[in-house]
Length: 197
Image (tube, rainbow, N blue to C red; front, side):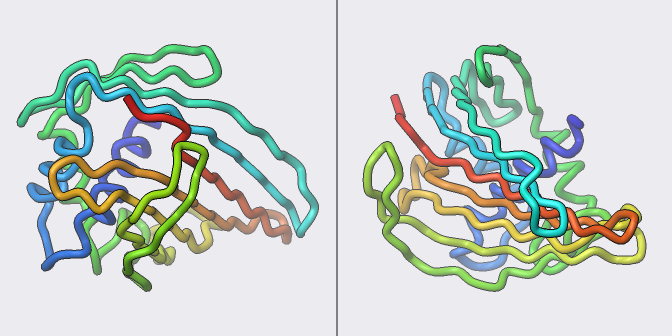
C-alpha cells in the first residue's frame, strides 16, 4: 500500500510539472516539495464510486485533511486525517526517486503500465474552495503484460494551480478498470479542494 501511495504522489508530481519541458525524477521531487510547504493545511472532499457491469456497488464520500508538518530538500512529513483517523507519514527524497525511477516518468509508465500524456492545457475550475486558474493534465496508463491479472486502463486527471512557487492540487479524478470473472469493475475517485490555510 505504501508503494502505491508513493507511486500516486510521483504521478501527481509528474503531472503538475509536465507543462514545461521534459523533466526527470529530481524535478518531480522538487515540484512535490514546492507544493507541500511546512504549515500548509489542505482539506479535501473525496468521493469513491465503484460499479460492476454498470451497477453501482459503492458510492462513498469522505473528507481528508493534510497538514504538512515539515518539508525540506530531503523529506516531507505530513499528518493526514481521513474521516477522523490520523496518520503521520514521512516520504524521503530517496524513496520518492526510487519509485520514480522504476518507470514513473512520462512515456515509460509505472511498473506494469505504459504512461502517456493525452491532454495538457490551462483550465478554470470551480470547487468548494473557490475558482482557480489551473494547469490541467490528463494521463492515460495502459497495462502491459507485467501488470496484475485483470488490470485495465487507468486515467488520471489533475488540476493544479498555476503557481510556479507553491502549486496545489485543486481537483483530481482517477478512474481504474479491472476485469474479473467476466465482469468489468470501474472505480472512480474524485478529490476536490474544500479549503487551504
